[in-house]
Image 1 (spheres, rainbow over the protein chains, first blue to last red):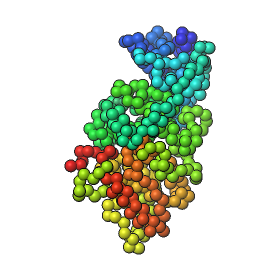
Image 2: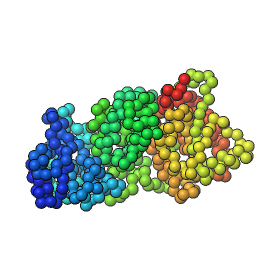
Image 3: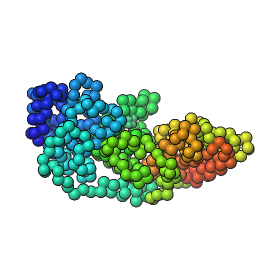
Length: 289
Length: 146
Ligand code: SF4
Ligand code: SF4
């Protein structure tokens, strides 16, 4: 949208912001990637449109401590991740100028993105100004985002085990899923611990794959907004969203409906409790063994 | 799953809270209430100290079952640690189940310092469950097993 580009150039030129986080074209037609623009000339390469699928909120971490304000362009679902980072005091609101960009659903070379098939709506959780049009307000028919999880839950334990071995054994531990995730934002990640034996390397045993994936999904449980970036970037097409959504589904069922990144409440299901919570044994009474 | 190795004895790790179940284990001992030697106790300051990674790590190093014992809900030495631990373990167990790991390899039990008998009963039961389940193959480092 030309309006976003123009407005960003205005704000850069009048000194309101010192830099812009946006997207630029890649070498092909469909591989737009996150990019930093520091002056009006660089803004020539700025693009926004069908292939701006990347969630830019994670890049805010990098600019939070730098001088001046940073302009960041966020789609409606991206603002949830931004809000979650605010809740966690990882970024300061006054350091960012948020342009909420209307979104008609994003694509890649294979078609519509998986995350857009379960769009969380067109509302902006955080913004300084919104630039969209009528077209971007329309919501499309959505699939049930828990369908994949429910399908797995119906399988027997051995079928589930075989399914996950098939998926997780393809993992090359490139860490892309972790690095792209706005919730997975630790300054020092447990998997970067040299004493862990699993530091940034390809897994040697099937156990390491299990452990990495359980812990990665676990660490973002309650904070994951289900933005779908992990599954989008995985070069091995591992359906990581099925792990995250399992946690979301469980927390919704056991501790009440919750959507990370929405509203003022900073408490997540795993940082709060009630005296009446179910005992852990409950998970063995549900679903298929 | 059948036990392939006839000499197999289960390794069971029990994370016990210092303020309750660890003392409960002591009481079981001084009261001469037996529990199987397969259970290795690791003392933690609170059930809430148990990081999900501890449990996975125990399995990696060859555990066949992991049990966590803490103070009864409402009795936490630090007021609310076990409430957080309860949610945490529920989520972890559910994820293990989702990945197809056998049910019953993980368990949480609340045992107070006065419940020596409960401690011994719980451990006996848990060890029996693990004998029935057999060796942990799905969640282990295969390199460590000959
Ligand atoms: S992005 Fe995919 S291949 Fe890379 S570490 Fe994550 S799951 Fe493994
Ligand atoms: S895997 Fe865990 S420790 Fe590592 S960055 Fe993600 S949340 Fe942090």
